[in-house]
Amino acid sequence: MVREQGRKLVAQNKKARHDYAIDEVLEAGLVLTGTEVKSLRAGRASLIDAYATVKDGEVWLQGAHIPEWDAGSWTNHEPRRPRKLLLHKLEIVKLIGKTKEGGITLVPLSLYFKDGRAKIELALARGKKSYDKRQALAERQSEREVARELGRRAKGRSD
View 1 (cartoon, rainbow, N blue to C red):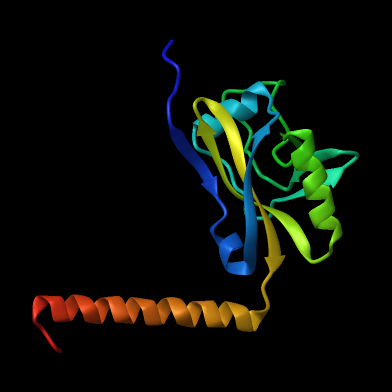
View 2: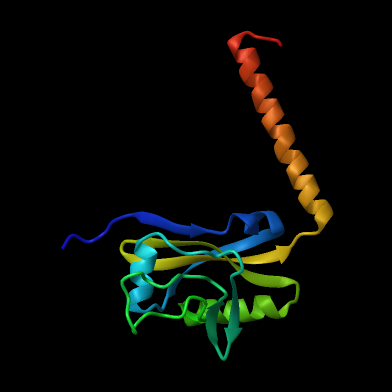
């Protein structure tokens, strides 16, 4: 059997970048059962309500939805069960220190396969206020308008 190469995206939490100010991003492995892996390989997962917590020196992914595998039997998994994340001890100690500061949370950004192994991209994030979200939206919109205008001028039009 040929080993997988590269990165295959399974799920992404697009709203996280809108709702949170991302401070730092790190990659973690996942402890999964066989039916969870098969369901992920089929491209079925959701990180919408997911978050990570540190409990007893271990990091756990809560609220991620990996649906049951269709061809599974009594060995099927629970869709929203807590899943253990695999990180180095020094990374866990650093996460404990950062999350104790207050106002900082662990948010999953994406779930993917990297060289055949399931990985999750975690972010240390700080919640944005509603005026910060409006400001970011306005900046993006103005950048789009500037790029559009530059494109028109490059083509020789001045509508």
